[in-house]
Length: 340
Image (cartoon, rainbow, N blue to C red; front, side, top):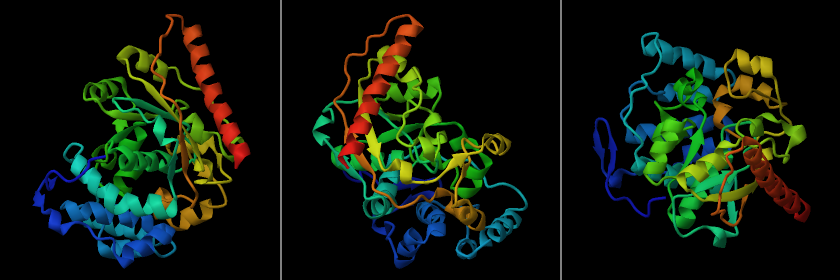
């Protein structure tokens, strides 16, 4: 993503020298292999570089690790904050903090837990910007996106920024779970036209799921079956003259296996999806597992870049082109699954 630190990490209260970089300790390794501890990893790292009096405290961290303890930790934090929600003000996206998070937290997760690998790296274009289009699944925290961003940063020093739904920025659960505006700080771009245009103007490398939420929502029974593609990725590519880089991910369907989505409950809690599986009993006991996913192998197969996107003015013709793009990716997925 960034080849090296060009300056010290900056936070609202001042600067923390590079010599005080975060060290992955025995406790962090414990949290990595003990699912309720993943939320601790994210918050501990943030608090190392940012003064955040509204964040979680050590006693609350330890409560995360015992059955039902998260609820007591939540209550303790709520009282400590004077019966209010955590503050949400924070500076804009800082690529230096993203680099630190990538090297110090994402590296062990992607390398040792998800065992992520890039295949056909020779298809990566030498010039940017580019729009990376990938099948998105798992019905959990978007680890397939995050891991691909990390691996591309390792391969090409790219800063990859995923387009993310508004709920990942503003939902009350995100405000309590993770540091303030964590999605923006780590580089996510709102899936809205104005934010997309601003990112394109800055030459960003964007990661896009043409299935939208239909990919994660489809559930375990339809694993590796691509759902309907939105037309927007083709329209945006054509309008802004951005080539499309198709990537197929295998392993993402196993991030949260055996799931179904209960749409009524999902709408009631105003969540993008609500996965119900045998793991739901563990999630009730340990809500801090909300950012965790099952151990799997995430293999990414990079296709040839699509430079020529010339669209007709007719919506039916654009739809057919999106369908052809989907069929091509589906054929590739099927072929790769047969080779396993």
